[in-house]
Length: 188
Image (cartoon, rainbow, N blue to C red; front, side, top):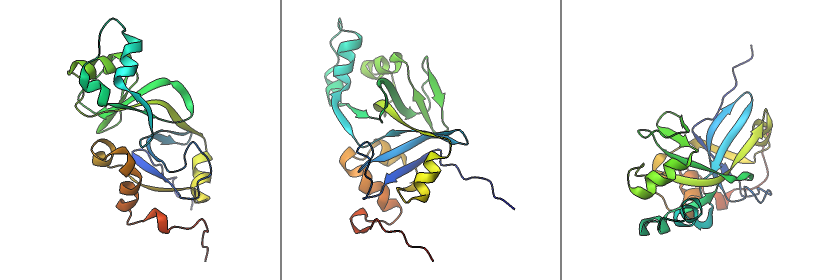
């Protein structure tokens, strides 16, 4: 009897140390969706050098962004549609384009950025340009090739842990020190 597939929505993908793809080497990816059609996620530990102020200056140049926006980094969410923005935040706020994901929501409309800037938006958020996408069966193949470790997502890692510590913090949830892992897979 065949068992039902196990999908990893609301999990972290932790890149194994031997990950060769430069888009994902040394990354933690939050899986927004994973089903029989494929998967979609956001890399959560790779700031791209921009801040929310930089983005807001482009979106509404007539308004000077508040100083707090200078300290809010924009992340390289993945190699797909790198000109498109995604904001991951706790539920409780709804915007023009918001997808509820359980305890989290994903908003893709500009109004979420304006609300964050104006202080009326979510208190915690992760803003990314681009996303990571996998076709049907592609992520499962990468998992069977030992490219990734997985663990349930942790909101404190997502929102409260500095980006440079997210990879080791996610691995630590599994009791794993990534520097001690090898690329070799064992089979009995």
